[in-house]
Image (cartoon, rainbow, N blue to C red; front, side, top):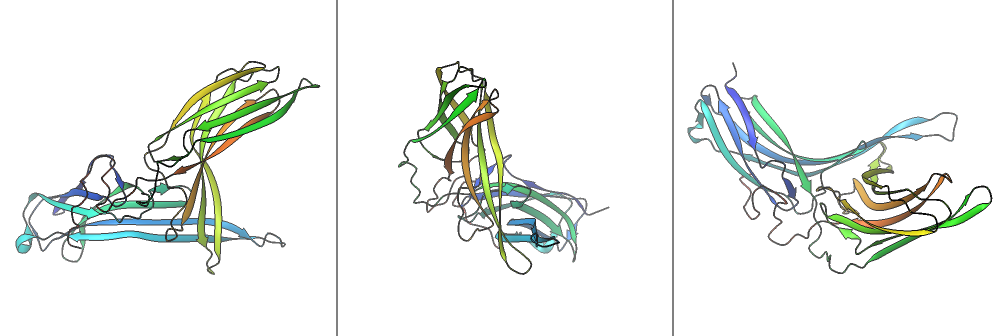
Length: 328
């Protein structure tokens, strides 16, 4: 029977941590019997990597794949807890810890091509071997520079129009306009926009789809150190409105898309070149009777709350900022 019954990390449930904020918690170690010369520690780790296969030599009679990859280490801190008299008795033992996240970190991210992840790992070691360990992944939201000014934004308006042919010889136009009071948002915020449709055809429009897309450019290297890029797009949010717009009629609707609480920030810092992200709101009017559609695309910017000199508080749960890290 192992001397260690269990080891657990006690943290606020479902907490989202801002870069630059503090992470506080406890390691709960339960022993079946006395443990001599134990080493009890907790580590904070943040890493990222991208990897994809890319064809080369496609212009010749053969093609082969090369693996493009890249990786980054964002944070690695360790706290080893002092043990009085170098022994722990049977039963439960609690160890408090606190770490400060660096202020300039990318957000937690996961896709088929790349990952950015953060975790805490607690461990208990005996004489030259690990007796037990526990890992818990964290949600970390990147933050903007303190100079970011969200008050100077201007309204946004994007229009699109298409001439539609239908019923052999008939044609008309469908106009689409999307308006927003601002184009810059923070994770968890609601994106509110107004869609106006002018239907100058003899047909009824029934479906309007609004979707938020993330376009991510990954940066990697081949085994011979050649730099490569890959662009992937994904749909983050989608909303479908079945609001009929009659023939030669106009309709206006107000829609809301709530952003996820953790998002990669738009752009990317020079030292964090695993990936660069941009966002786009696309509003599409489907015209099934003409096998076409009218689409308006609105670029939006996702930024984080500015970081002040004292650091950022948690978005929810967790310890307050300002507490120093434990011994490293």
